[in-house]
Image (cartoon, rainbow, N blue to C red):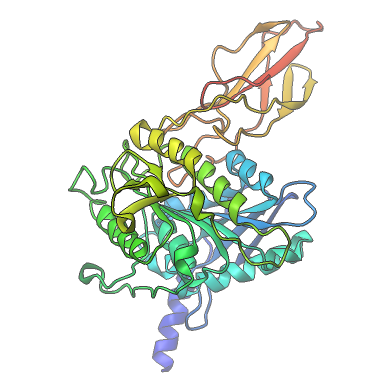
Length: 438
């Protein structure tokens, strides 16, 4: 027993905080952060973890928390350090009076990801402790009790789905990008214990979102088994009446691509339908009369009462508006948007340097800005718009769909301004659909 304990202590010591997990953005209000050392308790989380929280300024009582969960591997785990700073996800949180949380597990290179992405290995308990501690730290004690909306990539999809299976009464909705938990034993993954299916799980809206190159159209390669796991998870839940859909990304493999342009509207719809009117009340049920269905891997959706296929194997969608966006997404990921983004505010000029503030467009995010001096646009392209995995965005995006580090600032230095002269400036926001703010 003493030898076993010694080995356990040595292992957890190796997982203590070290580069690259010791460099992250500041967490001044409205941001808050807690960090926990690796647990030395049997069954506890063996990795250190940071939890960063953003609370919409001015919100009196939080109605929920949106969790943006990174995937496996040292790089993806590091990317979680900026998740709470994502302006697009903040727009969703603000609309529903929710906090936005981003965990960052300090998983060393080549360590077993299951030790955090399976919530039964201590990450569920650590997450709930963080909600309580962050609630006290932020002056929002209700955070410990509010519902959760979960988004996860890869191992984060395992985690988000696992949390929905373990705590269905708390989960308003779960989006599973390229990763799902096991519901049945898999001989190829014998070390992973399958979850049991609680009677309350089918009421939780979930979306499986693999890339087509993860076993749908491309059958070989590192991620070829992702689709088989998604298909099993989907069919098992649908056979029980589960509110689960499938949205195959037609362009990608394991990278996140343009999924946020469907994930955020989908979560928006689910949160609007599920969050209780009053704090402490149970989650509301999705309205079955609004549901649409589609054949698995098909492209045509119809209202549930008009669907002629096998409903137990059909993709579930929450309503007709979401079904239209889903159809665009699975075709080419070009989810349409006709509304302009919010306009920048609080423009300040200090010498030749301009600074401003701007919220992201809920539908299409924030691509960048145009600077206008004396009625003439002086920037030929959006400032800082880049993204190697999908539509260019102002903050840039890392592999697990989080802003690049260091965080980009909303500022511009007009090097061609007349020294000592007087100029009139305007800043115009652009969303990723190419629309300008008014």
